[in-house]
Image (cartoon, rainbow, N blue to C red; front, top):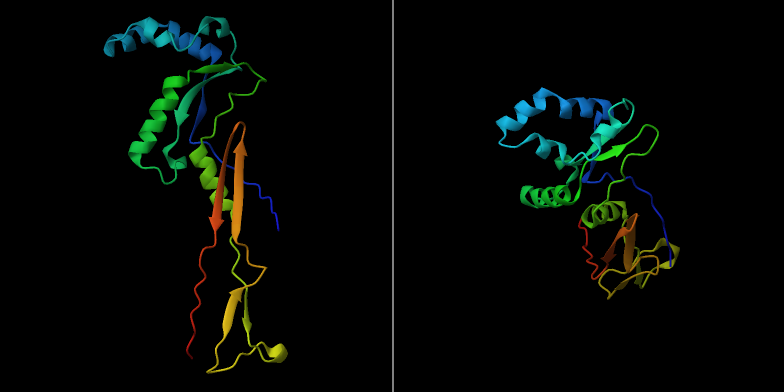
Length: 188
């Protein structure tokens, strides 16, 4: 049995996008402008400040940044708009803005199983089948015209090809299984 390992880069559909610095966010959430925005959206200032716990604590940090939960449609591959909307809504419901001080890593995104399955499938290389046949004439490999010929897939043709993609605690495995081999004759 032949085993192959392939690496691939996978961008998550949902993750975190860098936003304002701690200082800029504190200024934004503390100015009269936020009162104006809140009034125009039928919300109060506290509603706007709530997703940013302890924002005042980072008011002097101009090097660290807030990271906002975000989903990117262009990374969603074959998802329908409705499926993407569900994923985006679910991600944003359980994800809050996160502050990363200067020098620390931004929050690591979770890569969903569907994205990993797509990456695993894209990494699979299914080799062309190799065939053997009988009778053959010597080393030329020619067969006989008008005579029954037996054809089979040789041991070099895999019965299945499997690929697994893993990111953190999530993994996805895809398996391609050979069920039938169709041979066509060519006519010159």
